[in-house]
Image 1 (cartoon, helix red, strand yellow):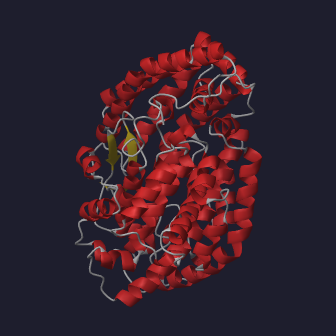
Image 2 (cartoon, one colour):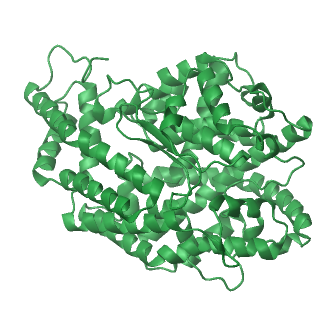
Length: 555
């Protein structure tokens, strides 16, 4: 790959258009590189401190980016270049791809500048409310991890209900702001000629709404019966634990606030191996062993709970030059083992392993779904007995652990797929008609796809307690597509590197070939290709559900 845009043919279709495109991209990078870095650092500071002044800086940094992207003169030039490119005027593939990516980047901001500022301000308000929120139970504030621990292990239904309801109160805190934000986002989308913000976001992410719904309909059909069978077994076990009938189970009985994870109801404690384990050390050794070291990421990261800090987890690339960081709130359990494998999986698919020779505009992951897929691909090892033992972690009652972990992993895929159905269809419905009864929409989908019953008499904005709906809108379906990508890539590795081995038996440890495969096939192309092209190049097939189905079917 050449230093800037890659090799070109001897004679471009239109040298003048090529020169204009090169000039535009160069000017963009010169202007936006410092703005991106400032915004990245401000975003990091706001999420690690929760301070008003840091959120103000974050908002100001985003406003500067939005103002630059909303420049009408610049967009007119970019649009003209793209139209010429679409007619074959640019033969340099990397330059052409840069034009396409920049067009999508600028398009979103071609709305009233004051509207952009309103959206940023309102988003900031909602995000800060999430960051500083802590559930209050019986007058005592508890951490997110403490609430999860009670939901996972508490046996008293009344206590579980109190914790579940306390956690949902953040939805009421943000309800008014979120509804205003949805309408502001829709207003911006209609200014750009789209039906609503949901349709706009799919377009900006190079996805087709009709294809997406068709894929999720296929997944619904594929997972419905296996899910109901798995849930029936889970319900029987939960009912015994709480000494109630399965029909009397409520949402707070399912261990996770949203039933997006498999309840720990089988014959082994999946947390037990991690109670004395060093999660960071395990991650460091694992990633180094496959040729993807992450100690520099760990050194820059903020990894433990503190007041005001975001209670969640994420990975961020500050400068596209290797300053990659993870925010986390680690406690020694299986959830955080999986979470750290996940977030550090994002970190290795970043400017750490994307060549600096890739043009700045394209020096990021190919797509949301591909980086989520990579993170999920590595996350799955946290429930593997073979992985734990080979990493030197003692497992008591190994046979029971392996059986329970296998069942939990299978159920996890099914449960998560059903949860993603709720998220996709709720957001689609919310942006199509934000004035409808959103509480009814939410619980209707929860009941249909997850089989949970709305608590009698409950009429609260529980949808608002899911941070992604507020701060990462129209994003969640990419997690499910990422699961498909994860299965497909893992099956390819099992086939090509491990002599067509059973994918369930392939755990990567100490095999640097895995890191080389991931770098060459997945990381290094960066955004020079679309997610469809990357999937085909890496796995030999279009993105589909075949490998995922084999994983949850245990075949």
